[in-house]
Length: 594
Image 1 (cartoon, helix red, strand yellow):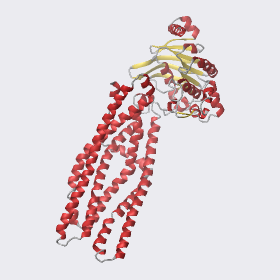
Image 2 (image 1 turned 90 degrees about the vertical axis):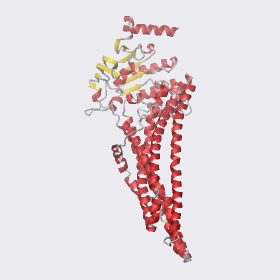
Image 3 (image 1 turned 120 degrees about the vertical axis):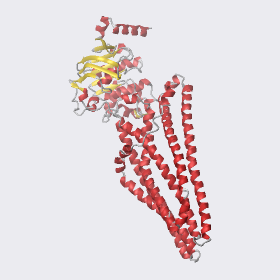
């Protein structure tokens, strides 16, 4: 039930129209203004050429056919054909230019959103489903870009089309023009009532689609867990509920959408019939010819399309307003972890680390660490042990500034990390996280992810250091083997070895290993430990390990509990003390023997 509530939370549907959000789009429009102006010119040309047809028809019927002027009929018919071809050609070029502008606007907005997202802290991603973020970057941006390119041009064109049609109709017959305009108030009233309901339904559909996308994204990422815990039936029920919610709203949108063409088509028929009736009455008085009536009927049929299009654009405008609200909400999300104005690049580090009275909380008022003091000399290896959730990973996360501490200082070679640029800080950190994330691409690309200029020899050397070279060479294409996102074709141990090689290759001044060998079998781990021992020489390192036997050789072991460091010392010192570490080590040893 909790999961169902999580994914049925709809984003705000009633977003007030905010002109500021549209003004923020001006830079994206300016970069493509030449394409939009070109598209507008071609659209106007296409409209004018397309509206010449009824005039040509009227001339042929009223003037040329009665005079049996075959040559003139052929010339006018040819002009009619050329104008129609010209309208199509102009429409083609207009589509090309608006498509070019649209794709460039999509690229610009999406690039800015993605660049900002990459700067956001872990807190942002911890509190939001990935699918909802994905919808904002992909779906919302597409709709906004389509409106900014095609919608704005189309709005101008439709307004001009109405004016052009009115001009041509008035030039033919002001009285018959009034007959056509008599239906406008009824159509506008219906469109206003229907479009308002349609607008709300479309926003609700968008929210339901966001919920559905978020749940699908999470379900795919967690498919192994789903199957392992036999959750298929429950997840299917949740999915069916979400689909049903989406389909219900989608059906409502479809019904309302279909009402509008029915109205305009019937209104066109009614006005045409009324036009013919009025023309017959006036025709008996010999005021109007057959050609004029036929031309007026043709213009009357074309008159309602632009009105409906403008109504559609209006509703799209309000939809785009809500999309922009969410896109700029993402872009305006404060960057909690960023370079300070006085931040400077860190020089090459020797590896001295100092925690001075450090306090940290993920949620305000619930401290994970309190008044932690720790001093690490260059080249020392520090092991972190303790119960789950005590803050072992937190200690290394704040060192890398994945999160900022609320109190105290963390110093590297005597420099406060808050006054160092993030790039210079993290490029000197080699981080092997608990989650062995593999990107889609080749094994080689994954290993050199943090060092793109690495040579083949360096890549192979890193793989050999962590005992990954042999299994890599046994794959289909060795280092050129393509692996899927998250490395689903590899075992957990193989993924961990590749991530380990990636960390080693970066040659960091400070090495952080968070459960680096948790998915590796014992025999392989013994070999990897030999490689780790070589890598750790002369390098400051922090090691979080669940197998205590693997960290017995560390220079210092910290037992983390109760929001701080409860014990610290070498393995021998802590065993002799017979405190918390001693009991943990003894219990684990006895468990392994059993």
